[in-house]
Length: 144
Image: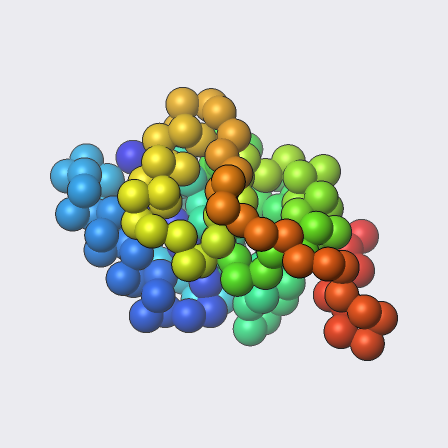
């Protein structure tokens, strides 16, 4: 099984990746901090699961869902984010993500999410508390 993280917080992604590696000897986990680093690897690596952060240094994570699915249709995308806004979740759902989980979730829940999406199911963190839509002054960028 091949898993990737695209997250602008490398220490967090690496810590989660290491726990996943320890839980399964058959798993390789790669971490990327920028889309520009992941994009050239995406097709050749054939990741089974990609954990995608919503706020990256070089772009908005939700903008990457369609290009990732086009380049690597077998890769199941799970949003791993500190953001839990209802409008953003709905946009990501409409774009075809396989799951959505909070960055603060315990590792057991992240491992459970991996297994569910590998098995072709969707996984959404039941403990995710959706915040209200942001006010106009703090609104997330619009997606196409």
